[in-house]
Image 1 (spheres, rainbow, N blue to C red):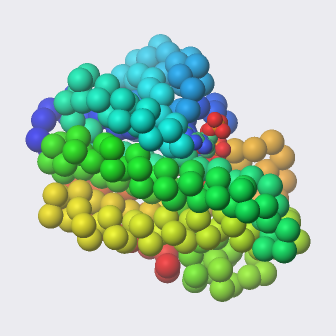
Image 2 (tube, helix red, strand yellow):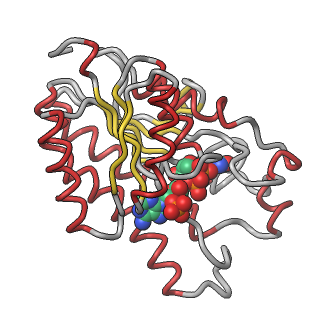
Length: 254
Ligand SMILES: NC(=O)c1ccc[n+]([C@@H]2O[C@H](COP(=O)([O-])OP(=O)(O)OC[C@H]3O[C@@H](n4cnc5c(N)ncnc54)[C@H](OP(=O)(O)O)[C@@H]3O)[C@@H](O)[C@H]2O)c1
């Protein structure tokens, strides 16, 4: 690390829901000693959550980061640069799923929104914060993905249907899954491009995680468990893997 442990910084996107993975990832990284920057599309979503962590002795702050508002991303990066100079960890956690998951009746505007958020947004946030990550000297980027976007995930990958989603939705989740296929591909490309800057980039599936009411009923696990594998990838040692896909610290097939 190029600076003392006290100064390590981590930015988490989509951290504005108390029940969501983003807040729990922030909490766990905060417990590891990072100054965690909780971001959401509206500041009011993250301010109380950051204050809650500060009250628990964690170094935390709130930032507006809307994946669909590219101008605001540049302003957000400038704010982080002014306050911290560099960024050590970027967790691209924010994503969305809207409307029908099916090929037959998918609304094309909703499909575009999903790709604009999950793929273009992830790319855009990374691009805007990249100079700060490069300046940090040994950055980590974690793209929170899903086994549903992998071809060969044994549980619910593209090829291995029917899986739990078949039981739950009656059809594969096509649109969202394909955004995560693109995120996985983007992870490989980012890892290759950023290797010479000592940045490790990996995709992580948190597993089926209980971030929505009732999801435990169909087997979703506690949020703390889902977040752990993301935090593992965010805190890899300098000789750790890059350009790979993991769940719970174990490599998954693409
Ligand atoms: N939960 C699971 O079982 C599971 C499984 C596999 C992968 N994942 C992945 O894990 C990550 C977190 O999921 P989650 O279950 O914790 O869901 P979540 O609570 O809905 O988290 C996603 C967050 O992304 C935010 N977001 C959406 N559009 C945004 C935008 N334009 N700009 C900034 N933030 C935006 C949402 O903010 P708003 O509150 O403002 O909408 C939300 O807080 C996602 O990448 C998801 O695909 C989850």
